[in-house]
Amino acid sequence: MNLTLKIWRQKDARSKGQMVDYKVTEISEHMSFLEMMDVLNEQLINKGEEPVSFDHDCREGICGSCSMFINGEAHGPDRRVTTCQLHMRMFHDGETITIEPWRATAFPVIKDLIVDRSAFDRIQHAGGYISVNTSGNTQDANAIPISKQAADTAMDAATCIGCGACVASCKNSSAMLFVGAKVSQYALLPQGQVEAATRVKNMVAQMDLEGFGNCTNTGACEVECPKGISLDVIARMNRELMKASV
Ligand code: SF4
Ligand code: FES
Image (cartoon, rainbow, N blue to C red):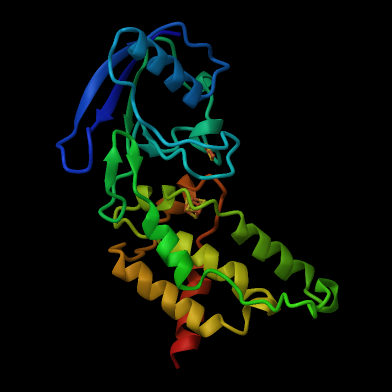
């Protein structure tokens, strides 16, 4: 496949960015999107040009770092996959593909397609954990019975990889799907009850402080989430917040 890529280039956080056109050739339909980007960068380096900076790590859909807005969709046109799992067979020979970084005030661009998602880390630090006694008297996990339904729903919420696609897809740049997933993961388990009230209050307060917008139930986040996190987590977060506030 031969493709035209329109890519957002931005030297650093302070510089003005712009879309730049590139031609990339000899792309196999079996390549992943990131492998296609690797080929482009090899071609750019061979020509003595600056390669395109983009985030990646696991390339297995686990780490959540490969954030790219492709043809107007977070992680591109396929469903329930991250950019590293997106295959070039989703595109056609001769196609023009537009590639941009996540767009949200709370995710400032660092360089080209790399954005600063440390706002998510600060929300996690505000309450996305449980305090457990690991002094040697730790209770056996099996001593606390948990219903299958609660365990499964908590596990579904825990599959959130913190990629930020929900924020990038939302017209309000809301982080509620992410925060709802983190709150739900603990709210459904007995181990999460001790700190439940402070957790939800602190995480929501930090979310607001970071400048994320509110949820207006459009549902774009749920559609674009590579892990299929359901809007139910937002409803649960709101219930937990109301419970904690009265
Ligand atoms: S909720 Fe989905 S889209 Fe949002 S950060 Fe988690 S995995 Fe990514
Ligand atoms: S590189 Fe880790 S999820 Fe894509």
